[in-house]
Amino acid sequence: MSKTAVIGAGSWGIALASVLDTNGNEVTVWSALADEIAMLEEKREHVDKLPGVLLGDGVRFTCSLAEAVEEKEVLVLAVPSVYTRSTAALMAQYVKDGQIVVCVAKGIEENTLMTISDVVKSELPQAAVAVMCGPSHAEEVGLGLPTTVVAGAGTQETAEKIQDLFMNDVFRVYTSPDMLGMELGGSLKNVIALAAGMADGLGYGDNTKAALITRGIAEIARLAVAMGAKLETLCGLTGIGDLIVTCESKHSRNRRAGMLIGQGRTMKEATDEVKMVVEGIYSAKAALSLGQKYSQELPIIEAVNRVLFEDKPARAAVTELMLRERRVENLNLEWIHD
Image: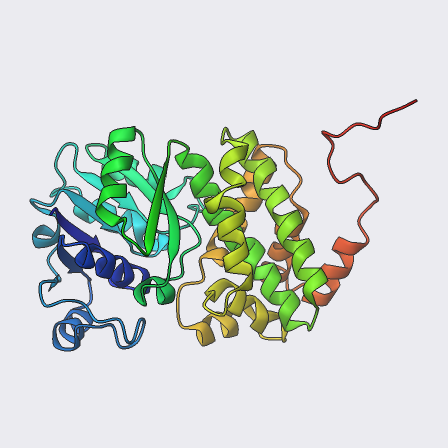
């Protein structure tokens, strides 16, 4: 049994707290919101964000970061990506040398173009910063449906520690040294999922969705490899796996926001209706900037940015993508001549 804390009481944080509790770990859940903590203490579930997932009597809840962080072996940082830096900064005075911090949010910081783990490292240089991601909706993890994810870390020892904490008969954890590839796959897929949702909102079919998923992973992989990630990572759970589930699932907030935009809502109207942080909107500009920085053409990501921030009609953006100049599918393949 390990002493653990989940920093952030959203749906993903609660789902992971449930896994840790099921595995016999000592779990503390932190939220900055006193009302949220009071509700969790009374109901033992998050009635708004993850109803029906009950946490055991041993799980503790607190608004005190000191109580949550101190004397814990592993901290799971589960606040939305836009709050990661500010939360990590508040944690800094309590985090000890070598304490493991597992980043489970997905995103790229817009003004710095840093991944979430790099943001945390900059605020918590004393910590052993790791990541965990993969095709894993909180709603299904909370219900105990079979799920696979990947734990990435700077050392094999840290990755295997996280693997041991979380793995059970319905939650399988692989390990990887390629944190960069994992995070880029997990972040950029949200932008592609917005596009997939827009296609659904416009009434397009399976052919369109398949095109967006396959050409989307090609864009993600080109950029990620140019930045130093490994292609194998983008072909795995945190690349194509995460992209498929986010583009297809009824649980995906990015897909749902995209659907609403495709149906004619504004970006603000769509996010207000979803009522949760839509990470893809925050990552879209950063993804475009990274493409420019590393000289990579990202037509789907560019189109999503035009729809989100330039009021481009979604249908017109799709038409522009279809009418791009002709080209081969894969530049690495050569024609065989007689």
